[in-house]
Length: 159
Image (tube, rainbow, N blue to C red; front, side):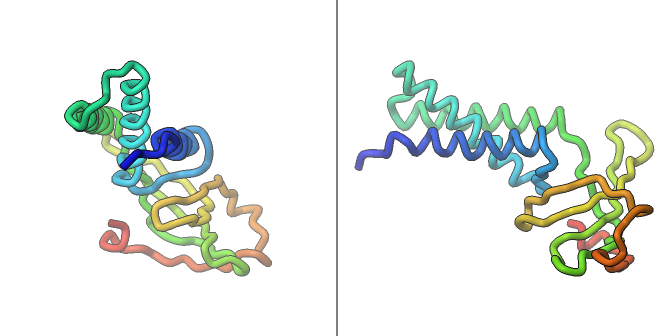
């Protein structure tokens, strides 16, 4: 069974595109496992493409070893550079027209510090693990488009 020559480049483009969007835009992957999944596939597909171009990754043993090494490197990268995820403490407002748009109050623990960062953010949920965030000013909020909810979330719902 012959593999399509476009499979690996398509996987690389999609996964690296999502990682770059997450890093440089207001697009946010809010689950670290999904983020690791996309990072692993972006790095391993690039390594396999380069290995095939250099005629080094030709058998299944070399492909498995590439995936193991990339998995270990991605795990180390995640361990040393991970910051706490933003956790929604309460939903302040909900859009009247589109229920998947909310304004949330969020906290994030500082790494190696005794405190937390706070923010009020507008969230548009694209999928259960993907969202589009924008900074919101609740003082100048159009009350005709937003309904005040003030719903407190418990710790059990956040995980």
